[in-house]
Structure formats: structure tokens, C-alpha cells
Length: 134
Image (cartoon, rainbow, N blue to C red):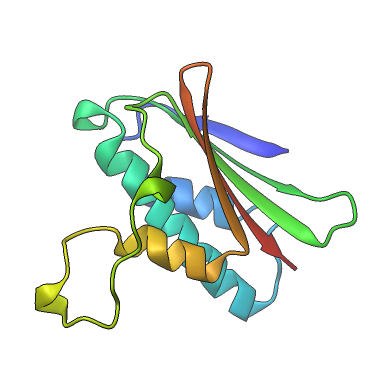
């Protein structure tokens, strides 16, 4: 796995996103890159904004290809406030914007762009794994 720990994460969203997108595991296909980048941006922003009080904390970001090279996994791990974004109900995207609850659209977009998203809380850490078939 290609991974790096960022500490502290305050004001480092762009650096973290660029690190992930520069991984040799990221496909060259621009359509796939768009979907992956959008998902990575949403997930990283959520950690940077909400996991730690004041952004003082760490985030480990990594990528890994499956043995057959047909699936990319992006793993984000932090020791911030426990939070499973997958427990949140999907927003009603058919409702007018002013009638929708605030929040939840980012993880909804991740679910649409990636093939699977898994969350677990293990040894005091949030671990979010997003996978995309290549």
C-alpha cells in the first residue's frame, strides 16, 4: 500500500488530495480520475473539517491495487471523533434544494461515484475505504 500520514491536517486538504491523486495506483483514464477525485475531495474535506477540534490531528491516506490490478482501494484513517458517514440517510435529490436538509450530499456523491464504500471503527480509529473497479 502507498500511504502517508499527514499531521496536523489543518489547511492540508489540497495537499492530501494531490498526494492521493499522484499515486501510481490511480488510473490514467480521465473519466475514472474525475470520479475518484470527486470522492477523495469529499471524504478528505469531511475529515479535515469535522474529525478533530480545530483541525489538530492526523490523517493517514493510502491507495492500493488489488492483486489482479482491476480494483483500486483508497483508505483514509484518522483518530478523530468516531463518525460513520454511511449511517446518514441519503438526501432526497428529487426535492427542491431549499426543502432538503443541510449536509449529506458529499457522501451521497461518493456512493454514486465509487463502487463500494466501507466504514469501520477499529483501535480508536475511523477507517473509510472507497473502492473503484478499473
